[in-house]
Amino acid sequence: MEFEFWHQRWEAGQIGFHMEEVNPFLKRYFAELKLSKGDKVLVPLCGKSVDLVWLWQQGLEVCGVELSPLAVRQFQQEQDLPLVAQPQGAFEFWHLPQESGQETVGLGILCGDFFQLTAEQCREVKAVYDRAALVALPLEMRVQYVAHLQQILPAGTKILLVTMDYDQSLMQGPPFAVSKAEVHHLFSQAYRIEQLAEVNSQRKGHPIKEEVFVIELA
Ligand SMILES: C[S@@+](CC[C@H](N)C(=O)[O-])C[C@H]1O[C@@H](n2cnc3c(N)ncnc32)[C@H](O)[C@@H]1O
Image (cartoon, rainbow, N blue to C red; front, top):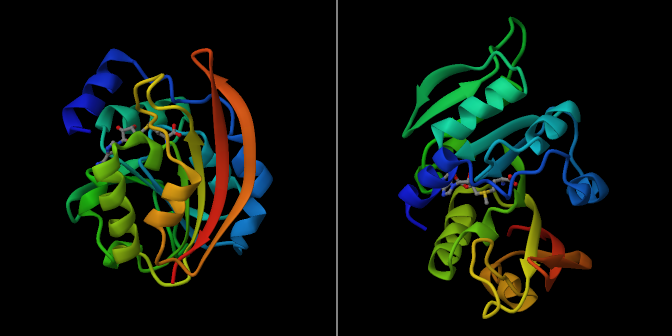
């Protein structure tokens, strides 16, 4: 997907992917990430997801990555957060002001291209939450996305991955159909891939399956 595609979606307000409520799969399966307070979670292609705030409220340090400055601005306004911006590598980092005595910023979004994210920026990451990120990308980019995750994340990082599968000939993406077999293929270098849920649902009147995985990187 070209950057322009996403910028236009945000400008036109065509953001059907955005949910007002915290994702139920996140709430149900969050414990599978086995995180401790203060651990850092990366949320790639985060949009203005309310899930960022929910993760932060669990006592985690949360870092989203989002291409669209408009999405970041809307996140700041809608969540009523006093985010401040500073350059960080290829990104502009919008984050809560660091209070004295506090080691981390708690919640922030790196505004820029996920593919520019470096291993140095992910040094402390313990987990990744992917909802509507992998499935937002066409196949060639999904391969690059997973390769990049594996390149920049520390060994042992756990990923909570929410995907959807359906007959791609019936509907256009995004979100694209990603089969269980594809998840296994994309993450074939991972130490562990476990499927946590498979739920039948509907999209535009067609049957789809929502699937949830926990993946542990080698
Ligand atoms: C389908 S939306 C999902 C947003 C969010 N995960 C959610 O659940 O609401 C995909 C998001 O990825 C962003 N995006 C697309 N390509 C990106 C890239 N290369 N780097 C960072 N963000 C990107 C888009 O602007 C869009 O907000």
